[in-house]
Length: 269
Image 1 (cartoon, rainbow, N blue to C red):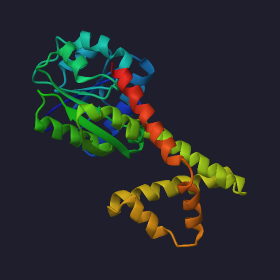
Image 2: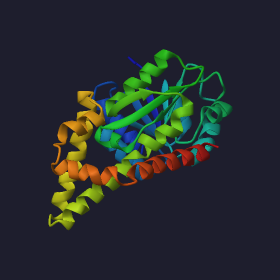
Image 3: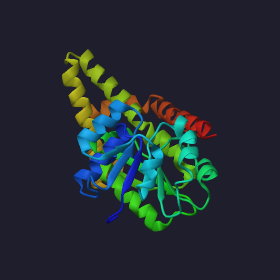
Image 4: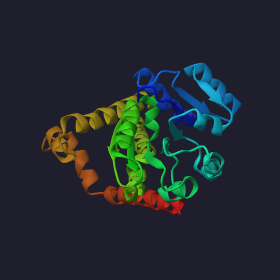
């Protein structure tokens, strides 16, 4: 990535999270990051925070970049593609984080010969703890894929996937933070019902969720093994496990993810 410039189309929250990660890791310096942003307030915040060049016209950002990262709302992507298609050459790498915008749609506007990588990130990227899944089209190279992995590794963890799996990824990790927020909140409110103040219970619940997730990632042990390790037969955890095992929570969570994935598939059409 030496001497390459990355241009963001859109400088909102997700773009800002990525820019922050790239700058703090020294993957790019602020002379090799630029953005196009039509919202004056958002543009001013990004310029002041990161000291990067901000354009009001997406074409200018594309012309001055080697890597173009599309970080706009999905409903404006089609218009954007029509606006920049003449500036997108085969030498430029296109990265899209727009949900529901398939390779078919991107290639229809830009050409099948263009190098394109799709990414499904999630909002914990804002605290450099995101989860991103990436896939490439036929024209993009393995080097392109590795470059995108490097970029998104600065805001969390990255996996490769096939485009056909993007909807499932959306159900599990793209929308997943909202489902974990819900569970964390409900456990905190259960603590509140037992006499804890909500703020204390929320800290207990959230930090426990964070620690449990870290145990899975860093130990490599399965959830089942970790449940066994923390459960004493006849003890308190065993009593709680019994309630979960006798409930229909498996069905509810499976349906939650399935409905989310189905909606993602519908949006892409």
